[in-house]
Image (cartoon, rainbow, N blue to C red; front, side):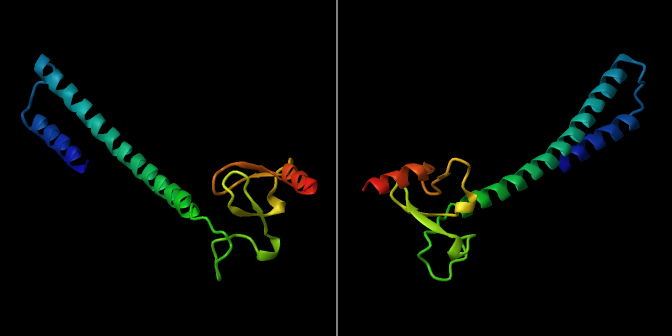
Length: 135
Protein backbone atom coordinates (compact mmCIF):
# COMPACT_ATOMS: atom_id res chain seq x y z
CA UNK A 1 0.00 0.00 0.00
CA UNK A 2 2.78 2.39 0.88
CA UNK A 3 4.29 1.60 -2.50
CA UNK A 4 1.17 2.89 -4.34
CA UNK A 5 1.22 6.18 -2.43
CA UNK A 6 4.90 6.62 -3.36
CA UNK A 7 4.18 5.91 -7.01
CA UNK A 8 1.33 8.43 -7.10
CA UNK A 9 3.59 11.03 -5.44
CA UNK A 10 6.23 10.28 -8.08
CA UNK A 11 3.66 10.79 -10.87
CA UNK A 12 2.59 14.09 -9.31
CA UNK A 13 6.19 15.28 -9.22
CA UNK A 14 6.78 14.08 -12.76
CA UNK A 15 3.68 15.90 -13.97
CA UNK A 16 4.68 19.11 -12.17
CA UNK A 17 8.25 18.83 -13.52
CA UNK A 18 7.10 18.43 -17.12
CA UNK A 19 5.42 21.84 -17.00
CA UNK A 20 2.25 20.68 -18.71
CA UNK A 21 -0.13 23.50 -19.50
CA UNK A 22 -3.05 22.67 -17.20
CA UNK A 23 -5.29 24.76 -19.47
CA UNK A 24 -4.65 22.41 -22.41
CA UNK A 25 -6.76 19.30 -22.95
CA UNK A 26 -3.81 16.99 -22.23
CA UNK A 27 -2.84 18.93 -19.12
CA UNK A 28 -6.43 18.79 -17.78
CA UNK A 29 -6.60 15.05 -18.47
CA UNK A 30 -3.27 14.22 -16.78
CA UNK A 31 -4.08 16.47 -13.83
CA UNK A 32 -7.48 14.81 -13.36
CA UNK A 33 -5.97 11.30 -13.63
CA UNK A 34 -3.32 12.12 -11.03
CA UNK A 35 -5.96 13.63 -8.70
CA UNK A 36 -8.06 10.46 -8.98
CA UNK A 37 -5.02 8.26 -8.35
CA UNK A 38 -4.17 10.36 -5.29
CA UNK A 39 -7.74 10.00 -3.97
CA UNK A 40 -7.58 6.24 -4.55
CA UNK A 41 -4.26 6.00 -2.69
CA UNK A 42 -5.73 7.93 0.28
CA UNK A 43 -8.86 5.75 0.31
CA UNK A 44 -6.71 2.63 0.18
CA UNK A 45 -4.76 3.79 3.22
CA UNK A 46 -8.03 4.26 5.10
CA UNK A 47 -9.23 0.82 3.97
CA UNK A 48 -6.00 -0.80 5.12
CA UNK A 49 -6.44 0.81 8.55
CA UNK A 50 -10.03 -0.41 8.71
CA UNK A 51 -9.02 -3.91 7.62
CA UNK A 52 -6.35 -4.00 10.31
CA UNK A 53 -9.02 -3.10 12.89
CA UNK A 54 -11.42 -5.74 11.54
CA UNK A 55 -8.62 -8.31 11.49
CA UNK A 56 -7.80 -7.56 15.13
CA UNK A 57 -11.47 -7.76 16.12
CA UNK A 58 -11.87 -11.03 14.23
CA UNK A 59 -8.78 -12.41 15.96
CA UNK A 60 -10.24 -11.47 19.33
CA UNK A 61 -13.56 -13.07 18.40
CA UNK A 62 -11.90 -16.27 17.16
CA UNK A 63 -9.89 -16.49 20.35
CA UNK A 64 -13.04 -16.08 22.44
CA UNK A 65 -15.12 -18.54 20.42
CA UNK A 66 -12.54 -21.27 19.96
CA UNK A 67 -11.01 -21.09 23.40
CA UNK A 68 -14.44 -21.12 25.02
CA UNK A 69 -15.29 -24.11 22.81
CA UNK A 70 -13.14 -26.34 25.00
CA UNK A 71 -15.94 -27.56 27.23
CA UNK A 72 -15.09 -28.21 30.83
CA UNK A 73 -17.12 -31.02 32.37
CA UNK A 74 -15.95 -30.20 35.90
CA UNK A 75 -14.16 -33.55 36.34
CA UNK A 76 -10.66 -32.16 36.21
CA UNK A 77 -8.72 -31.15 39.29
CA UNK A 78 -7.46 -27.60 39.56
CA UNK A 79 -9.62 -26.58 36.63
CA UNK A 80 -9.78 -22.84 36.06
CA UNK A 81 -11.88 -23.21 32.91
CA UNK A 82 -15.13 -22.75 34.81
CA UNK A 83 -16.31 -19.34 35.89
CA UNK A 84 -18.37 -20.72 38.76
CA UNK A 85 -17.54 -21.68 42.29
CA UNK A 86 -18.20 -25.38 42.87
CA UNK A 87 -20.89 -24.54 45.45
CA UNK A 88 -22.82 -22.46 42.91
CA UNK A 89 -22.70 -25.11 40.19
CA UNK A 90 -25.42 -27.65 39.44
CA UNK A 91 -25.21 -30.43 36.89
CA UNK A 92 -27.82 -31.93 34.61
CA UNK A 93 -27.71 -34.42 31.74
CA UNK A 94 -28.60 -32.85 28.41
CA UNK A 95 -31.50 -34.78 26.88
CA UNK A 96 -30.08 -34.32 23.36
CA UNK A 97 -26.33 -35.05 23.64
CA UNK A 98 -26.45 -36.84 27.04
CA UNK A 99 -23.47 -34.90 28.36
CA UNK A 100 -23.56 -33.82 31.99
CA UNK A 101 -23.44 -30.04 31.84
CA UNK A 102 -23.02 -27.52 34.65
CA UNK A 103 -25.36 -24.57 35.09
CA UNK A 104 -25.72 -21.73 37.52
CA UNK A 105 -29.34 -21.30 38.65
CA UNK A 106 -28.76 -17.57 39.10
CA UNK A 107 -28.13 -17.26 35.35
CA UNK A 108 -31.38 -18.95 34.29
CA UNK A 109 -33.82 -16.89 32.30
CA UNK A 110 -37.42 -16.33 33.37
CA UNK A 111 -38.73 -19.64 31.99
CA UNK A 112 -36.14 -21.82 33.77
CA UNK A 113 -34.31 -22.89 30.63
CA UNK A 114 -30.77 -22.60 29.35
CA UNK A 115 -28.75 -23.61 26.31
CA UNK A 116 -26.54 -26.69 26.49
CA UNK A 117 -22.94 -25.47 26.07
CA UNK A 118 -22.03 -28.66 24.19
CA UNK A 119 -24.76 -29.07 21.55
CA UNK A 120 -26.81 -25.85 21.86
CA UNK A 121 -30.12 -27.57 22.72
CA UNK A 122 -32.40 -25.50 24.93
CA UNK A 123 -32.86 -27.42 28.18
CA UNK A 124 -36.14 -26.70 29.97
CA UNK A 125 -35.68 -27.49 33.66
CA UNK A 126 -39.43 -27.52 34.37
CA UNK A 127 -39.91 -30.41 31.92
CA UNK A 128 -36.94 -32.35 33.33
CA UNK A 129 -38.10 -31.86 36.94
CA UNK A 130 -41.62 -33.04 36.03
CA UNK A 131 -40.19 -36.13 34.28
CA UNK A 132 -38.08 -36.98 37.34
CA UNK A 133 -41.11 -36.62 39.63
CA UNK A 134 -43.11 -38.98 37.39
CA UNK A 135 -40.39 -41.66 37.69
